[in-house]
Length: 345
Ligand SMILES: *Cc1c(COP(=O)(O)O)cnc(C)c1O
Image (cartoon, rainbow, N blue to C red):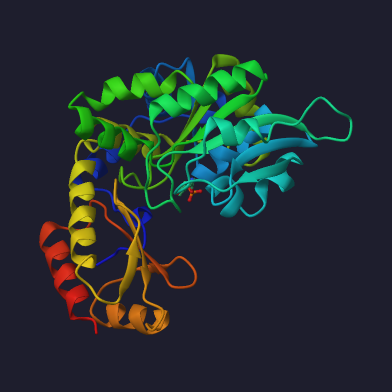
């Protein structure tokens, strides 16, 4: 049972069929019809003018940061955010920008916190240029922002002439969460989430189940610049329409099923609440469960016990453990996993 990440998801037979029959061309010449179709479809979902298909979410984030900033600028983000924590120092290396880090509430930061970090127009200070948010927050245990907070942040960014980027690696999970909360279709939420951001990056290869790829959304001019940066970073692919066809299939057929993953994560949370070896659990909102072991439990020993019982999971450092649910964990496997968790002493 694979709980390390939703990046382990495999293409379904129907997705493989879609890939097999995809029409392709040279995308560096913008002549791959499957990639063009995916880009148009995803831009329209969120009400953006244009989109760019890229090999990874790290690349879409790094391209966006590169287009929004100049060397010496400052990027405001949360201290556990992927763009800072998991992208190999890419902000400094690719764009020569520095970060201003904020400690958030399960990864989420507020307009007030951001406002306090905006530098004055003073030669001693770096030029604040970009705010980068994450939704859902990976290290925040899959937590979701409220759109009302995002809109307050957007107003602040407009006042200070800052760009606003969203690392929406798992944005589709968040949309399903909002949809579950208020009963409106996720497509309506998608339109609303497209409005406040200058750019959004979405992973197609996580819970959505496509084998490879992320999509970057923005204005026509922004995507024109992004295409140039993608080429420089070595991300200009040729007949990658086979991959785009998989991603397109995922967006059309595998978004609503994310609710199952969320239900599974809630079942894991419910079980963990009964386990005496658990110190605390981050409230579960989507498909990520992060919990802390009691101080007397040896984390490697816990992980070994789980591995020996067929459960792969990951350490988040120290005594923090992460479980991620996805389309390749079945309801019966969730039940099994819960039973095994209850067995650990
Ligand atoms: C997975 C992830 C990414 C992108 O990762 P890649 O492996 O490069 O596709 C970006 N942001 C967050 C929050 C992620 O979880």
